Length: 304
Image (cartoon, helix red, strand yellow):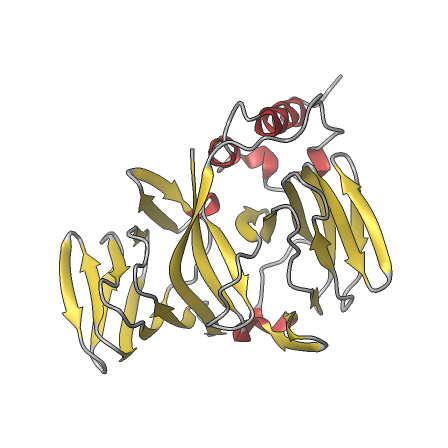
C-alpha cells in the first residue's frame, strides 16, 4: 500500500508540473508538515505528467543582498549587506531575539512597524522581535549595512510580500559569488529537517548552479520537477523524478538544466545537519573556491 505522505507529495508535484498549482502553493502545502522533515526527495516517484512542464506563478528578485560573515557561539548571525536602488518592498519579522543593524555606507531607509526612518552612515537601529521591518531604497545609490541577529532558520522568520504572509521555508534565495553579480541565477529554498536544514533548488532552462562542495558530509541530490543533470568532474549524471545521486564530501558538484523546461531538485545533507558557512565552498572564479561566508544571498519571492 502506498505511503500517504508519498502519495500526497507526488500528486502535488504532478500539479506543479502541469501548472495546476504554483510553486508557492506547493511550498505552502508542505510547509511545517512533520512527515517531510526527513526530506522530500525520498518520497518522490517518477513523474505522472503526460506533457511538458508548465510552471504557474513568477519569481521576484528583491535587490537586497547579504552575506553571513560569522555564526557566533550563541548561534547569532553576523551579516553584511547592500540595499540596491529600487529594492523590492517587503517586510520581515522575527519571532524571537532582535535585529541590530548599523548603516556602513549611504543613506538608509528602514521601515519599522509602518514608520519609515532615515538612518545615516554610522548610526545603529535596534529592532525587537514581533516588529515587522523592511529595508527600502528610493534613491539612486546603494546603501550598505552590518547586522547581528538571532540565528536565521525557516521557522523563526516571517515575511510579508504582495499582501501575502510567508514563513521562512516559503522564501527563496539566489546565491551570488560577488556583491555586484547581476546574473539571474538559480533560486534556493531552505527547509527545516529533523536535525538541521536541507534545500530545494529551482534551475531555469539553460541555467546552472555555482559549483560547490561541502567538507562536513555527503549530500543526496533528488529530482523533484522536470529533469536536469548533476555534474561531478567529468561525470554528467541525468536526473529526473524518481532518481537520486549521492555526492561525497569535498566533491565539487553542479546542477545543470540543459533543456527547455524548469528543473527543481533537492539537496539533502546526509547525515542531517545545519548549514555552516565554514564547511561549504563555492566557486567565485574559475577554479577558485571560497567559503560560504564570502558569497552573497539575494532574497527572492515567488507568487501564486
